[in-house]
Length: 371
Image 1 (cartoon, rainbow, N blue to C red):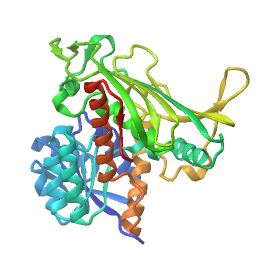
Image 2: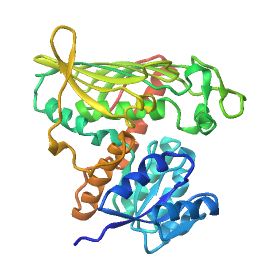
Image 3: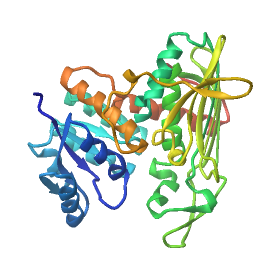
Image 4: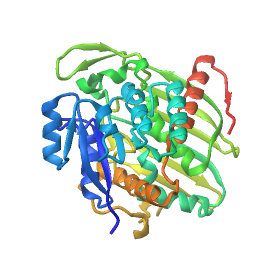
C-alpha cells in the first residue's frame, strides 16, 4: 500500500480562515494525505488545531514546520503579503509546496518564488482550484473538441458579495489596500481570468478600466469606517490570441444574486459555466460550478458531467470540492512525476496578465501581450 503524503499546513487556525474552510476538510477526507503538522501564530490555537485534526506536531514558528522530517508537503494558507516569506523556507528545505492564490503580493515576488521552485526541483502548486471543478474539466474537453464549433465570442461576468451593503468583515479589511496584492483584481479577477485562459487560450490584446465605486466601507465587527484604494470594479475588453473577442466585468459589492458566468458562443452552439447559490458570493473558485447549454426558448439546461470528471472522494460541501480535486491531482503528480496542476510558473503568468490589465487602465491604451 502506498504511504500517504505527509502534510504540514501553515495558517491552520480553528476560528476562521480558508484553511479551516477548505484545506483541512479536504486533507482529512483524502486517503492520499495525512496531516502531520500545523502552524499558527499562537501556541494555543496551534495546539487546538493539532488536536482537532489529529496532527502529531504543532508550531508557532513556520520554519520549524517546513524543516520537520515528518512533512513532505507544505501548504501555505495565510494572507497574501506573507506568502513569499513562508514559501521560500519550505522550498529551501526541499519540500513540495502548495501556496494559495494570489501566489505573491507582487509580480517581482512571484518571479522569485517561481525561480526558487524551479531550482528546488520539487512539485509546487498554486491554489487556482476552479480549474479542477468537474464541470470545468468537462467544459474544457467539450470546447477543445469542437462541440460548439469554432468559438466566436466569450462573455464573462463575475460579481462577489464582499462589500455588499457598504460593510466588510475585519479579516477582509487588509484586502481593501492596493498594496496588499489581494484585492478584487487579484482574487476575483485572478481566479476568473485564469479560468478563461485555461478554457480557451491566452488573451492577446486588451483594454481595461479599474474603478473604486465604494470608497469607504464600515467594518462589521467594530463599526470603524475604512478607506478603499483597491479597485472594486474591473472592466476588460479584448481579444484572445486566436482573435476571438472577449468581454469581462468583475466586481465586488454585489447586493443580491452574486454570481459568476462564463459564456462561450460558437459556430454550432453555446456553453456556459455558471456559479450561483449561497457560496457564489465568494467567487467561482469556492462555489459549485454547473455547466449549461441552451434549452427550449430562452432557457438554459444543465449538462451533467460524467462520473470520470469527479476524481476525489466525497467531501462535506462545495467549498471543499474543488480544493480536494486539486489535491488529488497533486498527489498523482508527486507520485508519478507528472505535472498537471497549476504551478508557480502558472501563477507568475497570471500575475503578468494582471500587470497588463493595470497597465491598460493606467495608460488608457490597448495592451498587446506576448503569448
